[in-house]
Length: 370
Image 1 (tube, rainbow, N blue to C red):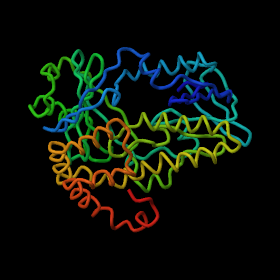
Image 2: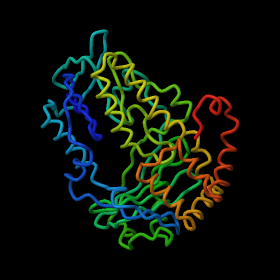
Image 3: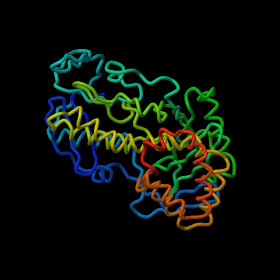
Image 4: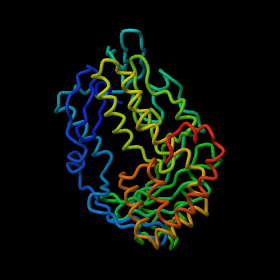
């Protein structure tokens, strides 16, 4: 975790150094296209159903290259970068002390952008419990790539197996709740069986074990109740991205919410009441959206819903358009029902999904309808 800069990058976003000076950064799109050979995704495949994607729907680039480009942009904009580790921190009424192995830094505010195992979270709030985490695991198939995403829905564990192309490899994996009673090794074995099987339809080279480089990492995976009680801001501190738990409980996608929350934090630091401003923006937008996803998660990966969804994707161009917008991040959960129920197949599926939501009268009465 760099001690002297916390970066956000959305169009017209800003960066926040520890010195509290807010400076302009280049946009995310500029940063992506400045990275090493981004891969344009042309389609997404769900079983036998293929969803075409338009030219600007999805671009994949190296996370290391993307992060480095953002850091370079912040430095060029005037941020002071210290390449070291934060080992501890303390907060008092007037500011924050941030300790590295060789120095102590004083700041007015700290923004924790240090991931699911956040040191900042552990000092200012409470670390995520095992039930609040998922384990994403799989392997990189080096030296083979393509221009499509491949998804296989699974009921046990609830979620999906994926293959995402990158410039020089495929990122293949699966995700499960950390307390689901399985291991990373067992999940990777299941993923390997999928790659070797004909259902995946990946390039044949992807099934060669000598190409595989395993990986595993924790991802926050919160319930609706967790989001209601989420600690992400307080006097002199803010949390963004995974450190705040801002990950889609259905897709386990987090980079968009990391960038969005960082933008909100940067803007809030320039306001009269930073904590109040950040809390209001994050709850009204990001947390409201993720709470809806958490409400839907339990029914989304059930076999009946998945069968109806995949069948509808095969037969219905409007449903494929909705899915394309979901993949591209243009379709929000709060308006998803309105679009899906215009078709007969997904209308029935959504009714089945709503059965799981009806017992929660508090949510139905107090939360915006989808």
